[in-house]
Amino acid sequence: MTVSVESAAATRDPASVAAKPMFVRRRNRERLHALDGLRGVAAFIVVLHHLLLLAQPVSQPSGEPAVLSVWWWLERTPLKLLTAGYEAVIVFFVLSGAVVVLPALRRIDFSWPGLVASRVVRLLLPAWAAIVFATVLLLVVPRVPQQVTGGTWLSRQVPTDWKWPDLLVQLSLMGPTVPYDNVLWTLKWEFLFSLLLPGFLVVAVLLHRWWVATGLLALGLGVVGCVGGIQPLQYLPVFFLGTLVAVRLRAIEQWSESRRARRLLAVLLPVSALVLICSFLLAPVVPVGTVGGHALIGMEALGGVGVVVVAGANTGFRRFLERRVPQFLGRISFSLYLVHLPVLATVTWLLGDWNWPVAGLIGVPLAVLAGWGFFRLVEKPLHRVARAAKRGSAKAVERYVRSERTA
Image 1 (cartoon, rainbow, N blue to C red):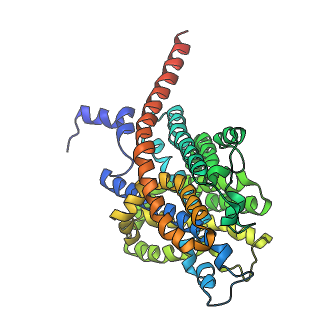
Image 2: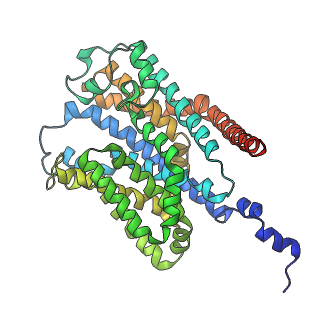
Image 3: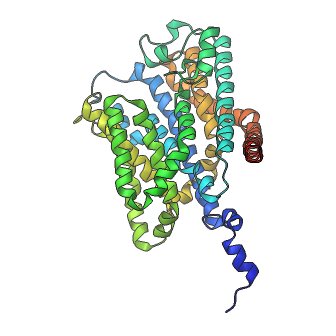
């Protein structure tokens, strides 16, 4: 068998290597589609989480729920997976750590300035639009205090009036909360991860052979952050775990093709799901707010990693996530995440929190509709702007470097 000079040169040519995807194109598309579906499911869980918070003042009894009561089933059994909002955010962070880094793994000439510019456009501008949307709803529908129970999550976390100085501060997204649309607190960590991504990737690549020890170390740092109330340690290691998954993605794909691996993956999914909500399941034994309770919250990142791994492997769960409804929710997931809370809060303020079942029946479909509209009118057009910003930033940095070399 002979090999032509041209083909041999192409094999050694760095440009040809950079252009070649890390995985087979068909499989890579399937994998990304499944992760999109997982993101959509997680976004809808956050919607249901906030609906449950709206219902709590009226329907949840004080103290530990009685065994076999409605709230016991919702809070102390695997049904909690349907409303585990914070845990869904942990899945978001793992997904970001995995998905955002994949382009950098595929191309040698990947542009980090382009990535940062693109992320700024794709995260910051939709967030600003969501704050404006929430402010408009606040002005259109008056927030009468008598409509909600005093001292509850809704009355404390959703403002009843607005001020220009507060609005300007919240547009930075760098504060501890964003009351006009308080789900936006997560974007601060998304931004920080984007800036730290080159370092995360280098560490993950250098230590990928020792992925178990590296992952456990990152998980341990997250637990320390939860116990000590150190938010950077609490959240940033979760992104790193996602980056480690991305670096090991090829090995995970190859491993998942074996029959033994598929049997293990079938067990890994329910186990990971239970670990993801372990702080709720074990609350009667390890009370919320204690050191042990905070440690369990930190451990939940391990469950998020397991769910992402199973979603990316060759499993029935992946095929479920590739179906029409999860894919639709995945397509609008960011928009749904941004606008659902202002919609739910506005409907509840309008009807009263004692009417939370009606507010839910109206508010949840309305939130999905608003998310779809926001995606079509705001997020999707900004995708083109983000791509242009990515190309422009990469070229600007390249021109500057070349001019410095010739100066």
